[in-house]
Amino acid sequence: MTGWIKRRLTGLCYGYLRSQEDWAHPQAQELRHSRVLPYASYAPWVGNADFLDVYERVREHTLVDIYRLYELWQLARQMDHLEGAFLEVGVWRGGSGCLLGLASRRPGRRLFLADTFAGVVKVGERDTRYKGGEHADTTVDEVRALLSRNGLNEAQVLVGMFPEQNAEQVDERIALLHIDVDVYESALGVLTWALPRLVMGAVVIFDDYGFHGCEGVTRLVNEFVLDNPQFRFFHNLNGHGVLVHIPRGSA
Image 1 (cartoon, rainbow, N blue to C red):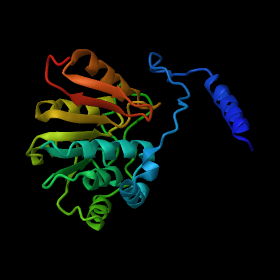
Image 2 (image 1 turned 90 degrees about the vertical axis):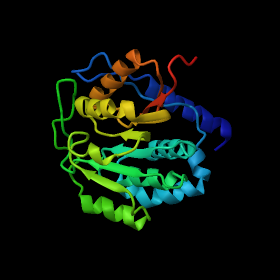
Image 3 (image 1 turned 60 degrees about the vertical axis):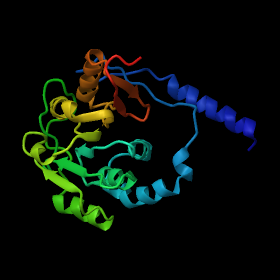
């Protein structure tokens, strides 16, 4: 098949998929969804042997796809010059948290992984799909075993609702915060606790920002960005919402 025919067929397929109507959850009509099909094709993870090695080790222990995992990897690597811990809230079976720990090259970087290990909590009226208790198919022992197999024995696993039941164990400031809790109130509680503890230049990644069924998190981030100019916000088409902490008054 010639290159021209391939490009033509690709264009027709993309055109058909993009022609489909947008949609929204009945409880969140203001948040529109559509087929996200960029033409861009650069895939830097394909040639990144270090990342791919870690990806193969964690892929069966996470619901996060390779696109978001690669972004977590890159952001963690870019934090090597900053002091502060890495914190993930919403761990499931530990795959993405383990990847963050392996990505960091800063000596002494501490890693905290927090989860209820009883599924999603704090579902409220701003949420759409979740009812509570989802993603409970995990155990503390499973996460600790994954960390141990990958040489991350110093990582701390925090059991219970964060921050109410275990935040006192995080005794230093935060350079990277990965929030993967699916619902509004849970994400708000984590973010509110973290704000005064973020180092300058820290990043906050919302795993669920761009996903149908997680409109509570989308709403939270959209509200936050309007009132907090000390953060730069990026919506990656992989579904991530990313905040970068900058000095007040920065251009």
